[in-house]
Image 1 (tube, rainbow, N blue to C red):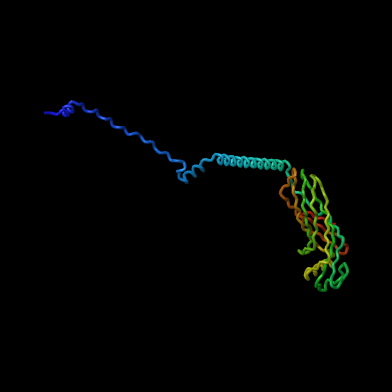
Image 2: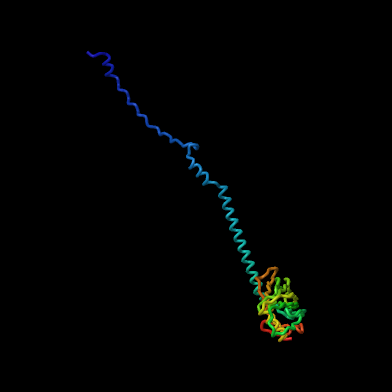
Length: 262
């Protein structure tokens, strides 16, 4: 005998199957900006800075433009100077000793106090002093088409390699295709000579009536073109002169290869 409950359970339909829930995709967590590592945040900020990049690029561009501009101007000036030099064809100026005037010459020995030498040349001379005053007239010739600027020049009078005195000529400017005369005076006041040189001086003055001197000097000149000075040009002066103590005058002069006897 079956019960009612069993009959009801046999005739009840089975429940339908429940659908299984599908797994839902979980969103990925985004890192918060404050949770970034400090090193990555600093590198990103340094690598991307449009203001710094644009300013550095403009500075480099300006430097390149200035360099190119200065290079072009330097080349232009050099080309103009070369063209002017080739057109002018500069020549070396001349600076010659034209005249020598003896104002005074005296030789004093221990045995004589006079201006002229009266001692016996056969007697040994231990010392002698020379006094001299001469006036030199130089002639400067400028054969160029442009002017020449001379610097200060110094000339030395020597006796047997011993410097006796100096004369200076101040600098001046000389026009193109011109001739200019410049004066200089050398004064020697009782300069003492050594024993051998004193004996030679007394012998030359008393026996031969001639004292040979030498005038040396260097003259610095620059050719001026459009207010620009060229590199320095050196003009040398080397003259041999002979003075008569008795006549107090010049008897011979020779400069370079040209000689002049008076």
